[in-house]
Length: 349
Ligand SMILES: [Zn+2]
Image 1 (cartoon, helix red, strand yellow):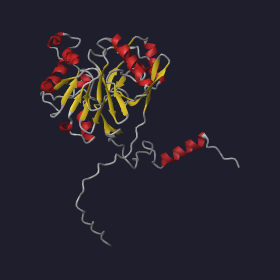
Image 2 (cartoon, rainbow, N blue to C red):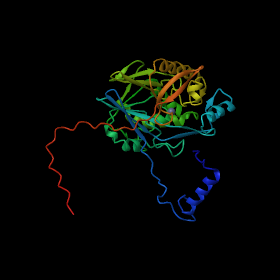
Image 3 (cartoon, rainbow, N blue to C red):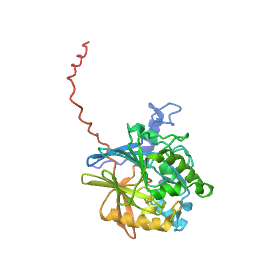
């Protein structure tokens, strides 16, 4: 027996019947849907295990960069537009995420980069790091270490409040001396091109001056966390290999800002690079290593939560986002507790 296919007319009739019954929002002659449109969203954190360690990604919120032709340099505007539209991305506004990993190594709770803080240079969607931490059940006072990939505004911005007080009272701060020296240099406060960045770096780093530890290329400065020099974006830009048992992940900071533009065409230049040529060379070298060794990466500016792999593709690379796994995290085994009194039996009616 042949099944009768639904015709377009059947579908329209069906829709109008539903609308008549007031079941399609906005079509029912003023009748309201049974449920209101909700204004709540999911919290902005994501947690997964890495060997014996645990990684919690927290977001500082999306950072809209605007028209890409001003920031991604070295290709024709039409080519940039095509790369974006081929990937179903808006072509007039590139929006970067700000994904900050918090790693519990078992001995330390380590936050990597801190977002824009109170600075609203890129609009009002940034600056939610403390909210995301709270949503994730992490208190600022529990952070033992803040590891900074580089001293740009969107990475150091969340360390101090508007009155210059430390927001992470128990944290030591780890970064390269080259970046500290460059971005806190008082003399650059008169350079229009960088003065906003320098002021914000000073406002956030100097309150921690007596607890800053300068780190070097190849140094395992915390158990399982090794710094690797990746200069170009800034003079002392660092990336970090995070290892527990036999699992590792690389936090790449601003090695690449975009999962398409600066992965598929890694030699493009980025307007905020201190040395764009060196930055591109570093990007190609590190992406090549991550692809060859199949090491997953955590990318600060990639689509939330910024966790995935890269593979070689043509003379560039391709990013493969790892699907989020929303699974129960086994609770820590509770200490031996006194036996609980039996719950009172439910009252019988
Ligand atoms: Zn950045």
